[in-house]
Length: 526
View 1 (cartoon, one colour):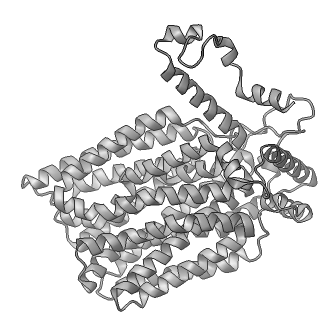
View 2: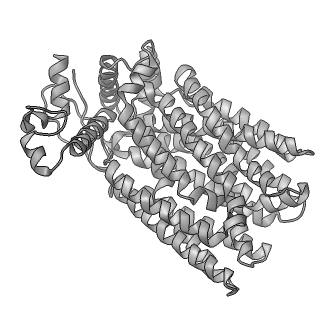
View 3: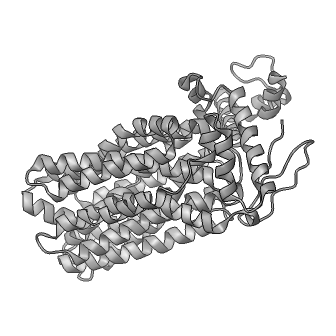
């Protein structure tokens, strides 16, 4: 079986292929750049819609709360319902994505978002708002699953981080557009127009996605090889490059068949085989939502208003945060394939820890009666949190979710992780307003600083670098790391480990246990 070798950096030539019968992956120079740009814009529009839906609530919330006389419970419910929708919609999005294709799932996302937006924009009763937000959340889960899977499968290996991160960049641009709309539509009826504006993007995406073919990887997995070849020929500028990519995909598919990870096999068995990547993906999702970055982004205007600022001033600061987020996300995307995923992730979490510590200090000063007239403390702390989130969880959680799994499992796995993570996201968004009222901003932000400090330690221990690696390679590294961790827990001392005298390993030589995981698997297969 011929296995393609990954390139090491974006724009570089593929790594030399030394194994017998190995064919190199296509170089980035072989890519049809215009087609790739068009496809990224068309599919990334899901991120624009998703980001707008996330961002619009920041400015619309005070107006909706005033119009419908929400208390803190109702406010939390209104904010949290999209998370609940995303959590419940994730599994269905994953199943549809793998069964019916990435393209059809994008169309389903657009239908759901349109229905939710219309319900909110025309709402006359509370339940109209609640149902609309819930349906928008389901649409958001479809957007994340389908577009991420499609972009990851579309991208050449040497630029996978850049192309997949387009989704997050457009999420951020969507948030900025929403915050500008919030600032421009501050009158009492403006909140309806704030929500409805996203329908323009939905209509544009439907027209843009229509000419695109289905994902080549999905077509090959489902036995449509001729259609797969035609789809790949649109991505590459030469027949030779397209043939190499088809060969690489067929080699990956052969590996998946060997591990019973194709349609027809039991999905639970296949996912159990990938339990270490699933565990890492879940850790990333939980840390992302418990970090407070999502909650702060949602309640940013409320935080600025609590600092004593007017609605107009708070709206301007919200737009400033949007600009910071766009710039930091663009920088992270530019660096993701050169610096690597792990360094960016840890740097961002450290910045978030510092940002929440600054917000806690600012909140304590306000509680002591020292008014922050210009909101500089709140703005600086929020900017640190937003920039840290943009370097870390923002682009990298979605990217790593897409990179950790093979084609046949990618939709299901992202759906599962999206559901599990949004459960925590729903809880975080729901309790933010009541907790801020009950314990005060200073203590709440201090708690987020502690959570981010703990997340830094966990992620530093658990995350491996996935840049320019195939999912199987990343899985092997994670399983080897898990085995080392179990061995360390079972050993009473480093000396025991060196002698192979750990608990549960009687008479086992240490050097035998150090056999590389890939070699041991190869030996079992042969």
